[in-house]
Image (cartoon, rainbow, N blue to C red; front, side, top):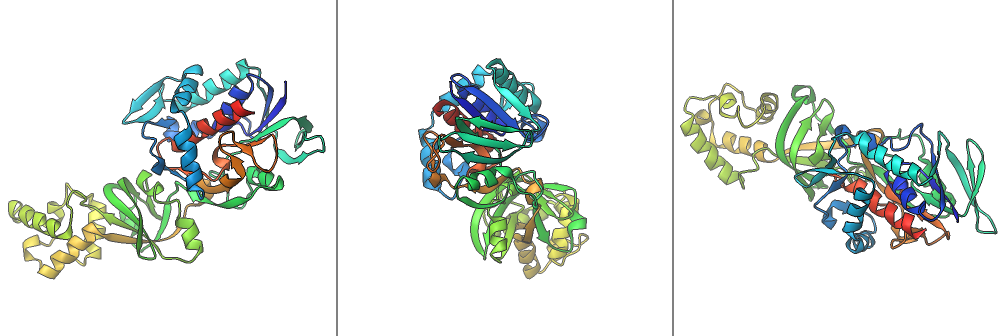
Length: 404
């Protein structure tokens, strides 16, 4: 049997270890004290590990055609067979898959238990510093503990998400050492830092809105849901799903804005104006504060009224037409300039990574180094919130584990 080294004991690495250990001797190198640390932190500790909606639009890469071909060719039933094999029973909510226990640790635990039952060896708190390929095509792995020789290597180190920006993530370093190109890595699924004077006034508010990302005044992407308004800017799942390209465009000194529609159930400014006129007649003698109190949270409403140069004590029927139009514009298209993200440390995923063009996606084997496989977040693939990044980890881990 061949000796296989897996660098990284996250979701992708553990999955690959379970498949590879059916035919080979497998050792997982993990720099942390325990494997699967990120798994236990996902989904607010509940681990949203899959999504029934596997539309290609939920996955992103610089090599989109290659990624789409990979996703279209992958047999989804194989993922479900894997979940069944490790004993992972789902609680499904609106297409989002969670472990029935609603405990993220239980996902990590069943992966580890299955791997150990198949005699996978684990070297925790053991960081890989360097990999060399010898004339005999064997891999010489230098670690903080010792030096090892392996026949095959699977890189599953993960991305820079959750890591301080000034530190290098060893996966990118090892892959580049072995000749691979790294597509620029930036935080994705991350909070956005804005530029405004009113953040202290709306901090702590949550509100429903349709959100649109604009780059240089051009509409790029839309997302809807609950926005969290903070003392630095904005957060929430819908904001995370807009955040992928923000850092890259800011570094190019492009103007980045997020626009909010706080009354998305009304299709246009004109329809909003007409609807508010009817509402004002029904709620005669209501101030603007009471007229909007069950539509928009107080703290956010006061910010919006201030931006529209109106006072909460005023009455709709006393406003001039221009003031009404200005208020409607504020409610339907409120813009916030974005100046930064909250960085890698706060990101749930990263854009960029090892170039997909350099990997055979039917096997996950490197096109540059024979018997080297690259999987999971280390690759130039990232998904939306909702179980997509773990989804790619399972799929790529299965491919590599079976192929090697």
